[in-house]
Length: 112
Length: 112
Image 1 (cartoon, rainbow over the protein chains, first blue to last red):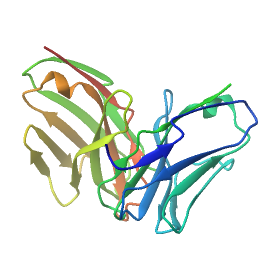
Image 2: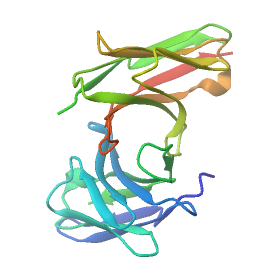
Image 3: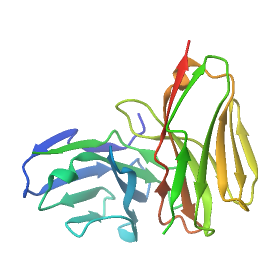
Image 4: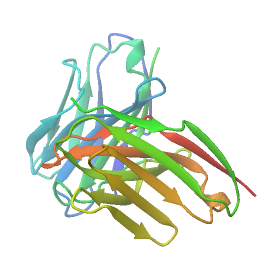
């Protein structure tokens, strides 16, 4: 158990819908990262937050947005969902940038 | 942006043999290179990392080598055991650790 929690574990929804994925980092970690893992694209870095502030964006679509709250938990919002958004979404946390990242168990999103 | 290539995509070895996984990267600004192990149904877990001021790093049966001139780095696992069977990912990140670029993964199968 990495200490990072993600909810829900599974999510099934329809095209065009909007969902929110939640991540609680390890106690004391200030950095949160979001990744998308799909069969054809591999593991893709989406976005990084540090102590509530966005630090870097990777291959994150405009339909996706995220935030980190004052209690350091983070949410990833996916809207106007398409079939191709079906994937595993991982959250990771670390004490700070450059420190070891600890990954959560992931949220499996299925868009029908 | 950075492009990380990883080979081979699958690797099958006999228990006790060594396994080598290779990655190349394109951006000379990358200077942090972590390796992750992902077991079925779990999130990736950091197993070893190397920074560009070091050419080699070892941790028990696992070692990583880095050649900055040639822009490639490799993971070496000696005396493989069945519990080493998993998918391994290499990654690269620039100095400020703001983004992370992953290889496509290597599925390692250690036969007892």
